Image (cartoon, rainbow, N blue to C red):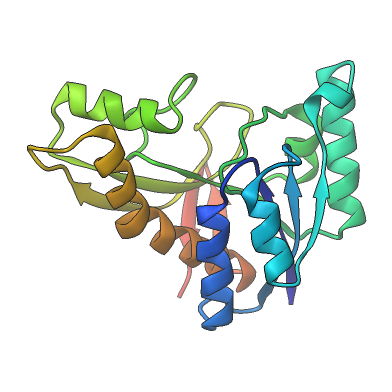
Length: 208
């Protein structure tokens, strides 16, 4: 049974999707062992409490340098014996030491079909605003491994969602979450926990 550490900063809707998937048996050979927040007021911490999941808070402003923060986050993940790290709306940047320690063991969910509308500055409603401004007919979500390039890690699963003529960024965000993010993130996590994901030449190979 693999230990899953979920990193959050806000409401925790993707965390809730993972909790629901765990309860329904969709996540095979894995359990959410801890929730780590960069914000002590994040509602995601309440979701963890309600479901008996241990939680911790680590705030960037408590550290003088990025390197110190990275090292502290890495050490917490090691203390928690995390086999997999899931970024579920984690809005704090981390780098080097965490990524190196957990190479191909950090999964992020991004609300677009990468490589569209991704990278620096593309987060939250900004992604959906850009998609609607461009007039795309299809958008969606991507579950991917995290590397040192923002949204540049190997793609695990993608799911498309149609845009509608009367969409606002808010309505599109909601539909992408419901139809794509909340479905493919638990699936990617379960595949990892079953040792069915392998990275070769920058691409993810899924074994059945």
